Image (tube, rainbow, N blue to C red; front, side, top):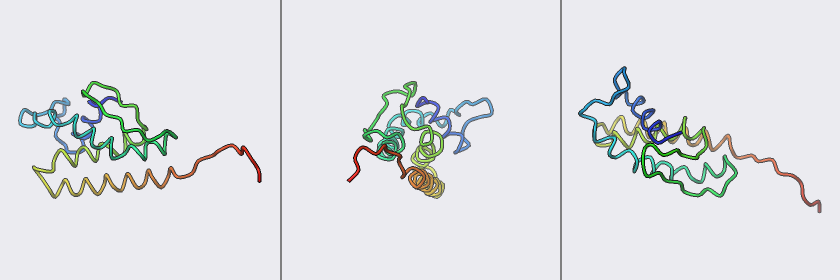
Length: 126
């Protein structure tokens, strides 16, 4: 998934895009902040991504919205967009930002609960 797709999902959560998928002119500053906000959410979810994908939990960042994010699809679709949406509207609507932050944390905890178990081959018996 690209950074642009994550940004679009966050805008849809905020109900900011028009029916044609266009960002209104008075919201142009959101796109300028999107890369940094996505990177914050990717850093916040790096350890959980490592747990889900069975990797070392390396912090991944993007430099443009066109860049593909190599991350767990669960996190990219169901968790990170709520965090991005929350950060995007913090200044404009703190109450909405708080509500979205709670949804972000709930989705994060749900993903965390469902990813604790791992199957490993038995290599040695004592």
